[in-house]
Structures are given as C-alpha cells and as structure tokens.
Length: 118
Image (cartoon, rainbow, N blue to C red; front, top):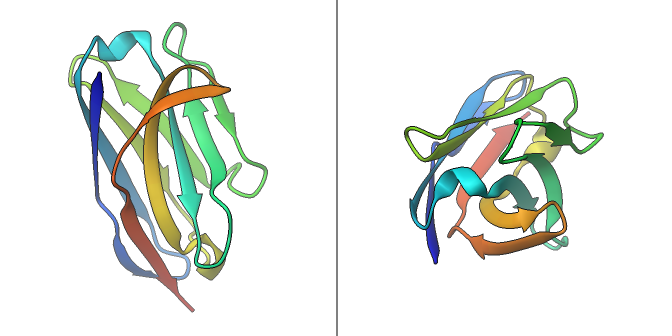
C-alpha cells in the first residue's frame, strides 16, 4: 500500500507559476512510476505527466509540454510538478498517482485544486 498526499494548489493569475508536491508513504517509493493527472469540471480525468522509477524518464501531455516539469526526490519520498506559464485551461483538480508502469497506476491521492484566473 502507498498513501499519497498532494499539496501546493491554489489560485494564480494566468502566466503565473505553482509547484505541486506529492508526499508518499508506505511501500518503497523509489520503485514506483509516479504520475500527475487532472480533472476539470465536467471533463474526464486526463494524464499530465509521469516519471519512471528507474532512470527518471519523463513523459508529458502535449498540452503541458514545455511549461510543466515533473521531478522526484526518492530520499524525501516526494514527487513534484512545477507548473509555469499557467493558463485558465489548466484549471482542474490535480491528482498524484503511483503505479508499476505508465499504464498501471494503482494508488491515488485526494487531489489538490488549481485555479488559474484570466
């Protein structure tokens, strides 16, 4: 079992930045692929970014590529999402997830709200 707790969400103006954090506890954090997803009102949850457990390969949705950066600190059992040049369409609840691969996320956090005003 892995427990995930997100933090760092909030209200920001368009063009601003936020950094989300996801603290993990439970089983060995470093062995999991970690990801960020988001869900806007009335829309399905979508993939945002992920980072592999081994060599730290990163993956991004086209909509955030070049603006968002995912990173992890295995010593602190924490994964981060640095979000720059935020747009109103980035407004959503952001969820942290952990799993064995990019297609297999088994554990989810409770989510943190990000609101970008125009």
